[in-house]
Structure formats: C-alpha cells, structure tokens
Image (cartoon, rainbow, N blue to C red; front, top):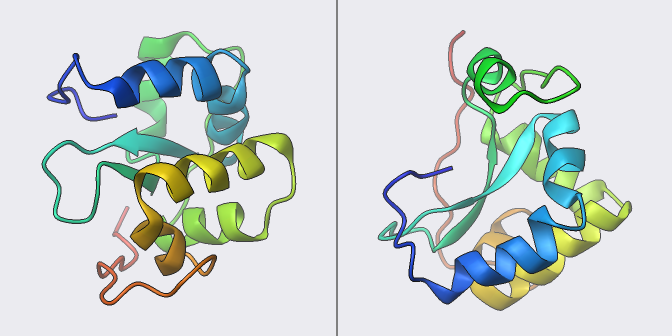
Length: 123
C-alpha cells in the first residue's frame, strides 16, 4: 500500500495478475491484512502488513465489506502463516518469490537472519 512504489516494477504486474485479479487482495482485506509493495525497504519489496487505517480503506476504496482492525503486523503474520485458503497460499507463493526473508519471519520457510520488530500499535 505504499504510494511511492516504482510503477515500472515487474512486481506490480505479478501482483495484479496473481493477487488483485483473482480476488486474493479482497479476501485478505476481509481479514484485515494486505500484501504491501515496499520499494526501498530494508525488510524486502513485498511484506505482509496489517491494514493501518481500516476506516480510510473503507471510505476510499468503496469495498462492499468493512475491513477489520488488527492489533499488529504480527497478527497479520499469524493469519497468513496459519491460513489454508487460496489467498493465504497465494501470499506464501508470492513471498517465496519476492521476499523469502519475510516468509521466514512469519514462520514459514527458512528462518530469516533478522526479522523486523512488529510490536502492537496503540489505537
């Protein structure tokens, strides 16, 4: 959900084809998380993140459902790690391709050398 992501990145085309178009993005949003392009981040170009401002997404994206609020990115990681629905499996595959360290941080794949601290945020 980074607005400053490089629009020419091949990642965006892959996400459109394998994440947004099949409806996985909306399924993730129904749970309160998203796969977020994070161009320039030291934690990788694709990350599992909680939706930081669900009411903003509700107002601006015109979704036919309300996005729930998660307490932290760690809660989003647990949903992705433990989920077995098609959108969880698609997230696993995309992370394996674009950010294997994040996959390790959430508890799938090889453990990452260092994982970002994802403390619960205050409401």
